[in-house]
Amino acid sequence: MSTPRISLDGLEPRSITDEQRAVAPLARSEDGTWVVLGHAEARRVVEDAEAFSSAVSRFLQVPNGLDGTEHAAVRAATDRFFAPEAMARLEPVLVRIARGLVAELLEDVPGTGTEVDAVAAIGAVFAVRAQTAWLGWPAALEPELLAWMSQNHEATRSGDLAGTAAAAERFDEIIRSVLAPRRALGSEDPGDVTAQLMRVRVALPDPDTPGAVDRLFTEEELVSVLRNWTGGDLGSIALCLGVILRELAHRPVLATRLRTGSAAEATAIIDELLRIDDPFVANRRVARCPVRIGEEEIAAGDRVLVHWTSANRDERVFGRADSVDPAAHASANLVYGAGPHACPGRPLATLELRVLVRELLAAADARPAEEPGEREIAPLGGWAHAPVVLVPRSVTG
Image (cartoon, rainbow, N blue to C red; front, side, top):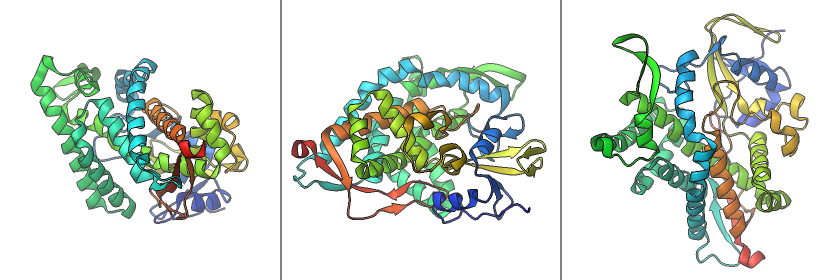
């Protein structure tokens, strides 16, 4: 049987991949890239870092574009920023930010509620405020970061490579603007996460010395790490919030469980809603050697796209893709990836989403809006616009 072909451009990721996955767990795009649609097949690729390289971009990507010992060294040096004790210190800060945003949203809201876009008006604003607080960046950057998010989103959605490059350069300039004053302070730096990252030592190759050397990150590497942490988180948190709130508006019983249950139950529900409608659409790999997956032979040098949105809806694992069962599906959930390159920022994203959703639901009920909203199209997932009606709980009881 010949390998099925798939076209993703300009289409909503779930509909096209649900249909194609029923035919075969792997397909090929028009440019010859392997598109991995099945759950087992996705895990096979991302858990075998010897056979599949993450060095797929012509641009420096630290740590996600590194392989082997270099990737392991950077993760060992930087994962501590997402450790449980670090997240515990951050949680009250995020609670304060979430409560402030919720108060703004509900100020002078009538008893019938107010319609808001969960992506732009809630998720994007909270993501910027949470990230700047975590990193120690000036709050005055909020308008610039929100404008950048809009620019980057439009370029990514349209496939405008020049626009995407311009957005990337603009974001790098923002990062350099926060590095420069800290570098000038030297030993008198403020001690925030950004300053701490600048003092991290890691075993990486040095252009002037053979082999790995225990050294500080270069300026280019620092910019790349902070771009990876922040640029990706800002847009993804906004998209996640759109998925979560829109679903909860249509599932009031689930919303009550999330609001009143334990933190662990709230996290499980959030993860499950994101599994069903995963906005982290895909990651890329390149085959280092010939690999056989199922009935397909992947050649050395072949490009591979691991489609998380599809893998997280694989009927062979989850039964009906849209069924909600947080406990049963937790061990197979691939929202944050798997293998050595699984998302390092998962603890931060999980905490941000749980805090924001619970604070919002403590103050208001989310109800469906009359406007249906607008789905994202590949390479993005989730909702471009997710209108919901917020009704203050002082009115609903």
